[in-house]
Length: 123
Image 1: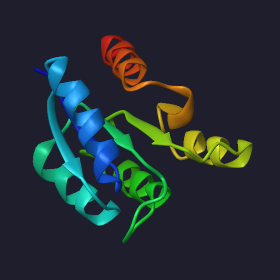
Image 2 (image 1 turned 120 degrees about the vertical axis):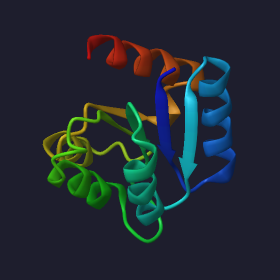
Image 3 (image 1 turned 180 degrees about the horizontal axis):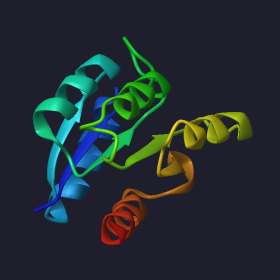
């Protein structure tokens, strides 16, 4: 069973995505802020992380940077799942090492699960 960590501060969205991943047989954990997300990555060791950018305590770009700095974590694919869709934000996220940049408004939760499966199938 593949493990997904969702780092999202909106409880409605994190529960909706978590339910969709659980329904698709993923072991799923949720973190509600950037700092907690980093702790959960260390403990849970997910196969993939869905990471929002606008987060309390530490933003998603900072979380992504810290993950990529740690040798034991840097191979975990990170998918930025956000409503920030400006070209410079997308470029920054990909430059920092995100595998994919998904704008929430453009993808249904089912489409997000499909995209995650595609990424995990390539690994």
